[in-house]
Length: 216
Length: 216
Image 1 (cartoon, rainbow over the protein chains, first blue to last red):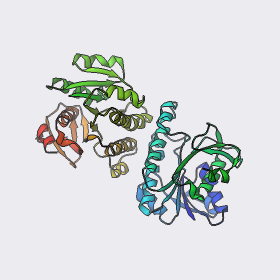
Image 2: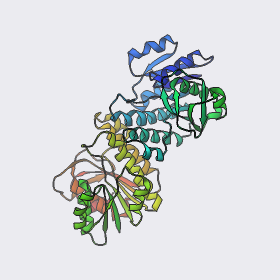
Image 3: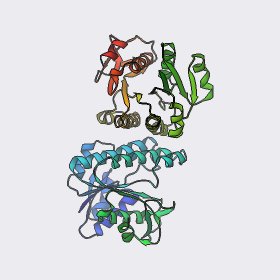
Image 4: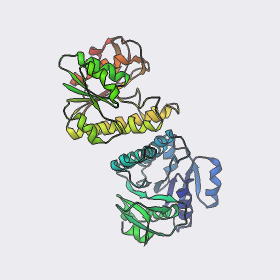
């Protein structure tokens, strides 16, 4: 299975590409923005492909045309201007979804935010609400397609080492989760068709990731 | 006909409320954010109602429950932070649409931007593209409803006095239009059911507004 990782140079993305490359029968195509990011992926044996998420659907479609699945784990991040939130987290996601439809890639795994419901928008602190709004509409757009999607809603991300155990359900208590464990959840999700059409929240917990995904 | 004007204190909104109040059989409810904005509308004989577009659907629904039509002409404006674009121009619009559905107000006139197509997003200068993205998704959301909507796409807005004449069609050449003329187009649109389910661009031109709307 050939997997396009959109946002490969992000912290979850880098873990995920490494895990994909270590997995029998899986191969990653790492969608990145800058040439200087490419070496990390080449050294892992993954194929880097340079596409800016602010470019148009056709450019993304070109990157997606020979893959079997797409993971969207890009994010504008806290360091960019606030105007990037709508351009990357919403429009970048929707363009990636449209690119998937265009080239006929059915399998799509979206890395969302922990809670993107309307209630969560209203409850969010004002500095965070634009991000929640962007993720809300990106998730809504994906739900409206007939892609084989899974939407993953991770808790507060940390850079701790992965524990390989999570709590995973449609609704869980808010909590933290290492980015490395999120990447492992994505890896298992890609390999488990039971997750198609589902969405779930994840935080650190007691269940081995593979088992948690199987019970999703 | 009782009309809720969302964004009444904006420049188009203030013209529009004044025109509504001068029109036989029409009555405006002016949705505004601050108490100190209310007097202008009271003096026109309109009913001010205080609702912040960042509050939830129920608050907007309450303001909309006794009206026959809703006009969305709110905008975050160039003076607010860029994070407001997604909160007001996109999410504020969608919440207003959802409020209309909730209380069963079918007629909805959306004041959009001149061109909100994907091509326009890609062509926009980077400082403007977040706004075009926000309007793109708001328009898309409205098209996906079964409301009796009209989407008005005005050219570059000016504060010139209205000429009462426009060019109006699905596609027109880019150009300017006084805000006062946009308000008059909205007024005629509200009173002409031929415009239901349609969208059109408008710039200054040679056709009297009422006739242009009738030929839409």
